[in-house]
Length: 78
Image 1: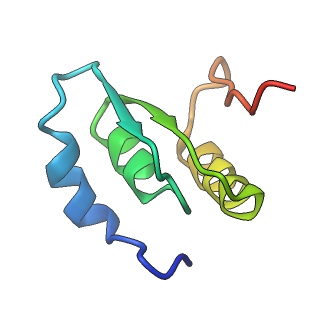
Image 2 (image 1 turned 135 degrees about the vertical axis):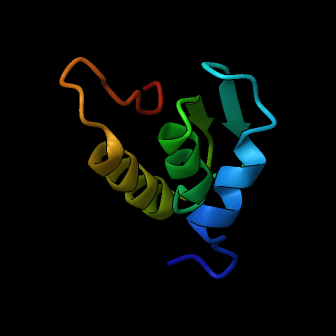
Image 3 (image 1 turned 180 degrees about the vertical axis):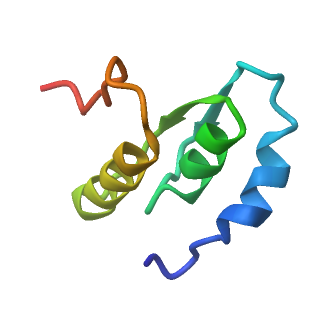
């Protein structure tokens, strides 16, 4: 849990501002609540965070939400 983590249900309402099948950008992704909400609402998601710790947490949370085998999570470019 991140100190400013938002409830996924609150974020689900906010990501609906993005058009269906659109892409939600969160430049401060932290533990990924916005990403989880975006996926649940049928939006794509791009999340950025400076902390490797929280990026790993977000990646796991997003992977847990994905149900189709053809989805891959992109990591930071090396």
